[in-house]
Structures are given as C-alpha cells and as structure tokens.
Image (cartoon, rainbow, N blue to C red; front, top):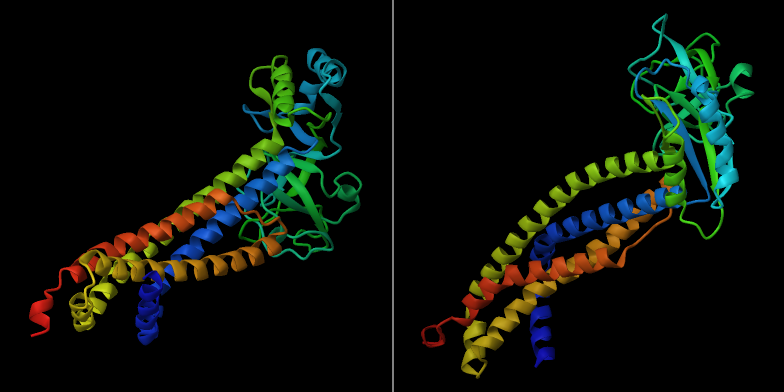
Length: 378
C-alpha cells in the first residue's frame, strides 16, 4: 500500500515539477543556511578550542587602570618575580613557563602626535611579503611593516600588546604609508596606521602543560596564583581563552542573525507548502473522490497527502543539506580551518524538516479526507 501511495505522490510531483521546485526552494535556502551556520560555528569553535586546549597557552599581565603604565615594572616586583619563578618549580602539571619575546607598545604616533591610546582605523588590503594576510586569519591579529628595528624583535607567531589587547603577529609587509617608519597594520577598514614611538618587552608568558592534565584547569590555577601577588588594577589572564571567547562571541552574533533569517525563510516556505497542498487538493478532487469510491478510507487519504507534503520538504531539505555542506567546505578551506560536523545538529535539521512537513500537510490532508464523494461523482 505504501508503494502505491509513493507512486501516486511522485506522479503528482513530477506532473507539476516546476511548481514543486518553487515550493521547495524556500526550504532548500533555509536548510542550507542553517547547515552553513552550524558547520562554520562548530568548525570555528573546534579550531579555537583545539588551540586553547593545546599544550601551549599564552598568559599575560594586563592593566585595567591606565594603558600607558609599564607592566614590566610590575613583573620586576620581588613578590611577582618570585611567584613567576615558582610556577614551573611548584606545579607538577607545568612543563615550562617562559616569558614571550614579543613587544608591547607604550606610546605611538597618531596624526603627528604622540599618544597613549587611539581609535584604530587601518587598511585591510595590505600586501604581504611573508606570513599570512587578514583574510586568512580571525581574532586579534596584526601585520608589521618590514624594518630592521622591528624584524629583530617582533617575530611572526609572537604577540604584541596595544592598549592592553594582545595581537598575534601574522605577517610582514613592505607596504609603506609612513615614510619608512616602523608601523603596524590592523584588520579594520581605513588607511591610517600606528607608528610606534616607544615599546618594551612583552608581559606575556608561554605556559606548556605536562601530559594527562587538563590545560584549562592548569592555566586557571596559574592565573589564580599569580593574581594573588600583583597590585590592584593589574591581573593575569589566559590570553588564548580570551581570544577564543572573542571569536566565539563574534561568530555567535552573526549566527543568531542568519538563523533568524533562515528561520523566517523556512516558516514562509512551510506556509507555501501548505498553500500548494490546498491547490493540489482542489485540482485532484475527482481523483480523491474516485479513491474514496474504490474503498480508500479517510485515514488513508489523509496519509496520502501528508506523505506528499513531508516528501516535498524532505527532498528539498536533503538537497539543501548537501549544498550547505559544499558551501561550508569552500568557506573553511578559504579560512584554513578544519570542517566539523556535529551529529546533534544533523539530527536537529532532519527533525526540523519533518516537523515542517507534518505541520504544512496536516490541514490540507484533513480537508482532502473530508471531500464529499457522493456530490463529486454525481
């Protein structure tokens, strides 16, 4: 009997193939959008968590009072210095705890004046000689102009602190807007750059954990121990985790917006499916009457049209899923991150499509089952 139902359903869908395509297009767009969002979000989270949960974690001293203060003077305080030295000695979970060799800006030239803080406006299209460009990386990153002064001190992969925010150096450029002065480029929108005036050694440390230890817990313990000895207004933070949080917040904000748009698309598509099912019933009134006259029960008529509604949604959901995965693969390849699928998200999308199909088909199917056979066949 099910085979008979499916045969009739496919016959109906193929007879009105273009209308069926237009009906399912909204479902396809909505489902593919959800797949892209879930996949990209999961891939970002996995990549950032892998970095945070790696053996190497960046821990830095930040100042919440004034960004121009010399944080290295705090590191030279006897209590702080002793606490830093004791980390690798006293904690079995710590393999090594070493100071980074990056640089921290204290002052910089902006609009021909020396300042301690500035609103950043930088060029996003910087020509790279070595390393990566902004389009290849996410998070807090910076590109350094090639210069003898900087090249010997700031290396790719190291961190430089500006206004208390740690930026990873991802590349070198020979592009110059500053008459040969050393400059920094940030991933913003406009063509203004910072020219360093004075800087000091980085106050960032690299924590390497021993195996069989939870790296997040070890980092938290290290941060808590160090924060007990620093003056008020200063604190050590897990920089790797902070970067991870920033990226996740940005991705989640974008995801929520697109999920809302995709949700609206799916709802509208569901309404469209219901509308088309009503039209299909009106066109097939005689067919339904003949089915009923030949002994088909009301429940079987309902099932026939309900299956048709679910099949439309299911087919276009599968197509949307495949398209979403393909687009996600292209995006993660460009961003150089691993493609990650979560089984629970796949299940959610499949269940969502089934629910939409049922909701869209229930009322039309009930209407079809209530057709007055005697009146139609007169």
